[in-house]
Length: 419
Image (cartoon, rainbow, N blue to C red; front, side):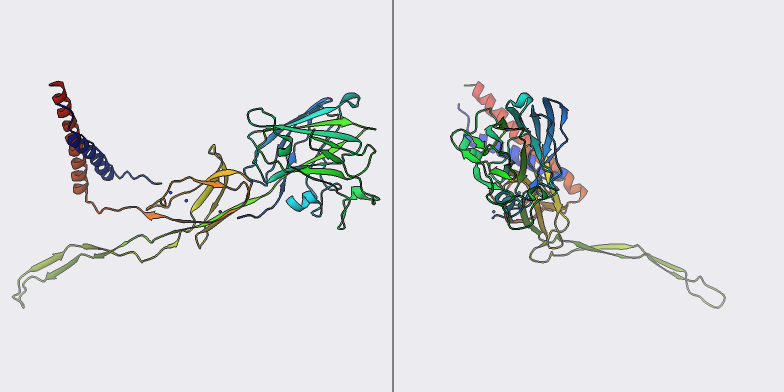
């Protein structure tokens, strides 16, 4: 005899239903839950280089762009430094500053050729690959040197030169607005370097000048960025800025009001009749009324209300928290300093509710722009008004169904052995 498919399905259904009912009896509930463009700018900070010529290290981070990967920097440049950005900076009127905001007051990294003015190598290694868009770097004072730019991906393969995202050359002194003090006395014609898209070299004009720059916005994830600084004349040095655009993740969370119950209690009362006296023949009577409690279930109002003070967080794909916030009085939330990239969004589900339809965490991709207009509606958990006795009965029924499913399967196995 072959397995009876009807009985097999019955056994599986019985077990599944039994587990569900038993879970309900124990109070076990499973909760689960669902984009636009606004650029901004945050600049990288560099730790003061440590080491000695010709071996130095530094660390790189963009604390104003939540989620942008940190990096380590290693160079054999002679005496690298990290100026404050008070006298040399990229105005918002420059192409790079227009994309990322002014770098005034922001630190930058200065490097140069190595011992004997031989070419130096500066390598920045990111903890995780950079986003595929929305960030960039600028090289300044590229005049008496030339700099070759190269990169590798997470697998160590070379990133195409075209994916380095060369944008343009410019001179940070060639602006009409207030100029950095480093530009004092610098007038037209303004020096600019040249870019060779076939070799990846940004080449200065040989003679020392001020402000000759080029900038890049990579279009592929980068794990390492390498700069080779080769001398053309004199004792040159170059500058490096790194910046990220900022993305916004915003939305609203609402929920239907939970049904509530109103409980009223009537206090105990005692009425006593006085015993007979010489002037009265009434009998003694004592009446006591026990306190009573009445609970009346109330119907929840129709419609939804804002979910207020609900914690919302964004994590990277490894689960590391990138940013957190809470909903306001209207249920709105916004995180406005997120680095471009891919993330996961979730909320801390309020008591009495389950997550919206779908699955938390919600994938969020802000690589190329903001994600706004997210809308969630939390779902009230199903509530069953069970008494303690009914819970026990429900749990017992669940266990009986599990046993029934097991017996059906056992019967099927026994029938098969008899074939």
